[in-house]
Each structure stands twice: as C-alpha cells, then as structure tokens.
Length: 489
Image 1 (cartoon, rainbow, N blue to C red):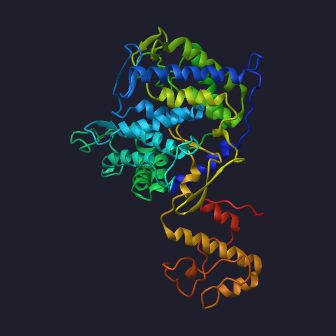
Image 2: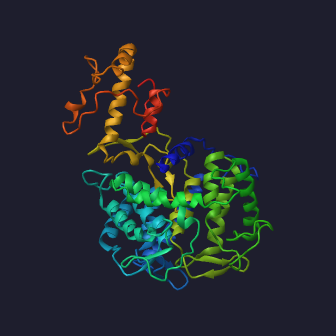
Image 3: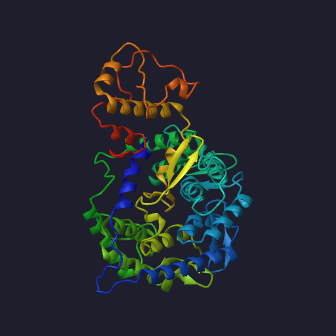
C-alpha cells in the first residue's frame, strides 16, 4: 500500500530534535510562551468573528462582516478549524463543534464542489478530528476508531467525490456536483495537485472503513500521474540543504514585500504570473514548520515571529483577517479562507509549542481495544495532509477487515516462537509432509483451528515462508505489517 511508505517519514519527523529558545540572527531568543499567546489571540479573533458573522456559511468576508459559501456549503471554516482547536487546548469547544457539525452538515446537496478542496479540507478535516476525538474527551462509540459519526461524515463526503474518478485514465475531474455527479460539460483540464494528493485521506478512509474503493481510485490516479511524468523525471524528496537554500530565498522575498508571489517564472527568477500583485499565502509558514522540525535552525523560529507580526500588522481587520490581494499597496480581498485557521495559525502555534502532543516522540500513547484487537494510538509521528490536518498513521492498523492478514501475523508469531525454542526442529517440521504443530509448553499459541473455527485448513505442504523473504529478521517481517517488536520483547 503506497500510503505505508509515508509512515517512516512521519515518524522520522516526530523524532528529530527540536532546538527551542535558540538565539535568532540578532542574538535575541524568542519567547515561545509569549508568541503562543499571541497566536492564540490571532486564532480566536478570526474564529469568533466567523461564528458571529458568517456561520453556517463556508467562510467569513471580513470587510463586509458577513459570510459566503465558497468550496461547497459545508460550514467549511468550522470543519477546517476543528483539529486546531484541540491543538490549542480547547477541548470544550472541540466537543461542541462536533455536535454542531453532526446536526448541521449535509452532503446530499445540489452544489458543484471542488474535488481537491473538498478532499483536503472536508474529508481530511473530519478524519483528523475523528481520530483525535478520544484525546479531546469526546465519548466515542463502541468500535472506535473503526466507527464514529465523524468517520461516517468523512465517508459520505468522499463517496460524493467518487464519480469524478470515473474517467478513461482514472485521473479525476476538478469539480463534481454532490447530488448529480460530474456535469456533462466539465472541463478535462485540472492541476497536478488535483490528481495526486488523495492518497493520504482516501487510504486512511479505506483502512478505517474496510472499503478498498477509496484507496483504489486514489492509487490509480497517482500511478497514472506518475506514468505521465516527463523525460526528466520527478524528485519526490529533495536534499535538505537545497530545501534550506530555496527557503531562505523565499524569506528574502518575504522581507522585501511582506509576502510571497503566488506564481513564479523559474528561468527568470521571482516574477509574478497569472495574478497581479503579491498575495499573502501560508506556504512560507508551512515550509518553516517542516524545515524547523527537520533542522532546528533558529532562523526559522525567528521567521515564525516575523510572520505573527506581519499578519497582525497587515491583514487584521475588525471581524477577521482579510486576504491580502497586493502587499505592495496593502489592498485587501474580502475573504478569509478557511486554511487560515487550519494551516497558517496551526503551523505558527506549533513553532512555539514544543510540548504539544503533536510533537510526541512515542513516550506516551493510548492502547485502544477494537473489534479487531488492540492497537496503539497517539504515539506521535503524525502525517499532515495538504490542509495541515494531522493523521495518526497507527490508526491504519486498527481496523483490519481481512482475516488473512491476521492469520499471517499469527503464522509469523508461531514461526518466531518455534525458531526460538528449537530451530532444528522447526526446519525439520516445515519440510515435512504434515501440517506444522506448535511445541507444547507455556508461551505457545493455540492451533489455527482452535483459534478460529471458521478458518479453512491450509494445504498440508507449506515450504515457502509467507512473506517470501526468509533472510529478513523477524522484527523486519512484523514491521512490514505495521507492527514493530523490539528484540528484547
């Protein structure tokens, strides 16, 4: 499953050292607590203004102090802000909003919605909030995280997007009508992000619900996109030094203009295309968050402080934060996009909160009993989707519907204990014509028939290990199945 390839990267990011309080370029040390409170104030200024002036519309219009629907009609800002509420520590509001969303959001509506934006904001936001519900003190239903109201909402929203993938290539259309499907006159032109960024949300959804259709369509679209790459190929993971150099070039533009161009002419340098002016975008803060976690460079913490001050100075208005249309003359756009609360504020806050649960290094976790066995959640290594919604990759292994996978783990466990007790006996037994029987004594497992009477008996001869990689140590085999056992266990 391609999504599993992202798990080690997410775990690596959570374990890299963080150097908080290090001196900035001017020799001063930013005070994380001070800036945490300033970011909180920024969040609640915008959030409260949305609730007072725009709810239940998608987004706030801060210049006219009213609301409008933009990407659908989902109370989008409320969905996008939900996990940010928990990251800021507001458990009671998280619980209240969960109830509000269940009572007010309906996806069975005659609305043309962006497939990409609905996925990253709505499906991603609901999945993240679902997996964080227990941490937020929500009374979860039996079977969680394999069931729950937010999961059902995410599944309903995703199913509304599936008709967009019914194309000759498997790559989705850009928009879909949530009630009627793809419009006959829908344009076939879409962007790269609108094709290849569904795998995080859709693979998570398939793992939690047991329905493979979501991961299947996302993987097919991603693979077709990869097959269509140019002759020069595509670098998926860049060198960290090159990333830092590129980022510092962006920082220079930020300092000069107060923001970043949205489009670039790569051969000619930093020029603006397609849109006049220098719009305020969250990409600089997003990049700062990722690179700071990877490098601990104090310059990035300093930039976070600059971003807080710039946003407050330039874009704050009476009832929210206006999008800056042109930072050269501070011309304002009458729109506060939902990503301001989902991404911009979240990344700013996490830059100054080293003890946040998102930064967990695995020292604490929650053991959860599901209908499919015990699983571990909340141990860290969160994967952020495009809209900065954190997904716990451990949840992918909590809701296995395929009994064959459970049997494979059991066979590996029996193989391990047999090797540990008597390697020579194990080798002789596996080469025999009869079925393998576990040795008697404490610590052994029951036979497959006793463990699950509905399981069919395997053929008598079984000479090839299930994973077809006998040279690997047992710990590596289990790691492939999403579980890690230390040698001392």
